Amino acid sequence: MTDGLLNDQFATVSTPTGTLHLAYQAFGNRDDPVFLLLTGWFSDLTLWPRGFCEVLADRGFRVIRYDHRDAGLSTRTDIDVIDPDNLPYTMSDLAADAVRLLDALGIEKAHVAGFAFGATISHLVAIEHPDRVLSLVPFATTTGRRAGPRRPRRAMPAYPTDPEGLSRLHKERFADMARESFDAEDYGARRKESAQRGAPFTRGDIQSAVMPTAGDRTERLAEVRVPVLVVHPEKDPLITPEALKLHVEAFPDAKVLVLEDIGHGVLPERHWAKMADAMRDRTL
Image 1 (cartoon, rainbow, N blue to C red):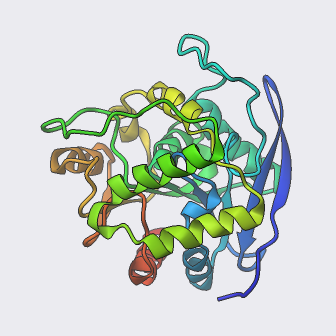
Image 2: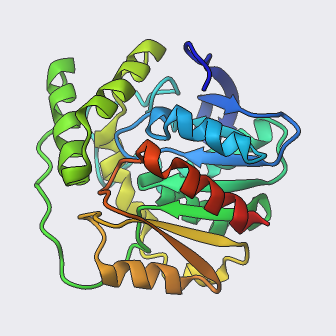
């Protein structure tokens, strides 16, 4: 594992509504096939652990993790009040951003993996930009269709505007989603890495508002014709067994990898090699 802080790089991309600067970090050899990693809700790129990115790069990939708009060091939306009837962008726009990043980096096609919120975006990348995707790895998400009994969720309070309040909310939510697999030391290390980057908290309020725009993707996922690896945290409180089954069966030919004894929003070191191997094997 490399010591020290990894330098952020920035790609400038054009959208129908303006210009974005997307922060990203790259691992591995420039000439290797690319694995693009889409990060999750309320998170910057550090949600994909740096050590995991290095393990995946060792499997023969150029690994790129990046900040969505309104996350980490990427461009921020300058609004205080979110109007659900007039959102600044949609989940499809975030999927298009991923493709725009590939364009800016001169990458024709990539393997695409998404973490939770990012996995939902990865669905849309594969559906709406199929010519850019070599394989798909959605991690800890569903098809957007309710399946099985509704599991109780903690109501989301209003997002605080002060850093201390945001910090408290962030930790509470990730501890709640990870349940017994929440590791305060690992969480603290990730927050430290974000702070070292100079990254403010992600606009989780905007992300929560735009998430429903992804809709029910169940039928559309049948159009995906690349290798698919569905990764499921065994103790994820947000995903029912019925939803997992529906997710796997929605694709024409998907394999599933269950990561034992973890909840939502975590990828502990003990699973890095297993997941990297599965991602590599599914691309062969």
